[in-house]
Image (cartoon, rainbow, N blue to C red; front, side, top):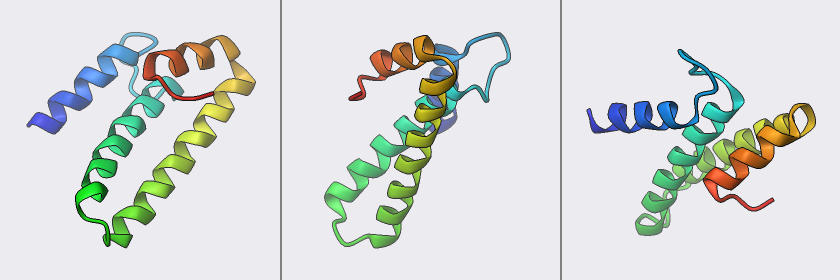
Length: 88
């Protein structure tokens, strides 16, 4: 239940319109949350290579979504980068 509540909270914070669950902003925010969670897991489980591979996949997916936003809507890109505190 806690994971579903956290996901809903992230969606509510980053949605661009009512009922929005799939905009690039929401996808990037959800991926960032999952990346943080898996990153914490890997700090205590150094040899978990399967999770490390999944983490790298999520990071690359987020990078591609951010690149799409940078090309299509630079103002939305800057806004999401600022909200999430990601490096440019």
